[in-house]
Image (tube, rainbow, N blue to C red):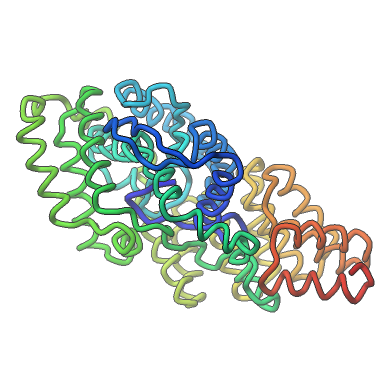
Length: 445
């Protein structure tokens, strides 16, 4: 998965670091080392991952990442609009056959990212900052550039395989390394981490160039890419806390901006008069842009959570929810904040409200389960984690919490089964130690 922006990872799910390592392991186990022609440059390059593997990794991991970002938007009109812009660009890419999917996720921080199989997501937070459709096209074009140049697969082939082979046995340990005495850690306090890979300057330059090529090919003025970079630079000056993680992972350098300006005037100088579709963008995002003040409050709450200033975070989230009381992301954020303060009852209330707003999104079920554990209501917690697993299987932390719930219910046999499932995937960290010690004490080892 590639991104010019910071990404956030909910510690209860697979993080991007886990994703890269899992992907690399898949490549090692099923691919024969060799070279392949880059679909953009035509040059031969080391490539251990086949295209079908890129797509498979994409399909397995995108549901987890989208849940990290509070699910795909329930605004069908907004989703259709963004998908339409993306499809317009996809038709002029170097890999038109890829199963591209374009999604708006409910996260309120500023980000966009792509998985190697063609799934691209943008957050509500960045949609609220852009001014026209051409800037949106520039953003999607950049992410399409990473997919088409196969940057993720190439980087895995070059540098990630050895690390995956060495560390594969504990590649998920990071999801379970928090103390059991601090359940806030298990639900990812801030819920964010920097994107694991610093993509090379050459990768970023190539994605910028391809992004402008694709957007112009799709009928947009190259000024869209220039405008996008200008928006991000302005945000960095105006709201450094809202965008500092993005810049630390992929700095919005003056060079990239100046290169975009020069390219728009030279190679694409004849396309300057193509439309930017500002009015259409404003109409299509009107409802979302009205929530921009709420997004900023939530961003401030996230920053406070990261600093463990939980009372401040609670205040920011509460202010934001006054603007939109049924915002799913805000309700889940508040539930996390209450868990961090060991207020199980309030955490459960917010998670229950979030479930009613978006019953098919998994994270609220997980939060309600954690809140129920805080209240020592283990039977409810078990039901919550079981519901989560039905919606979104494959999260080892959920398996652990099912075992922990059974243990709280004095059901050693079922607890042991879940702990054994967990230890097949995770072998390090406090949760793994807890599971192992229980299995040993109970005579299962």
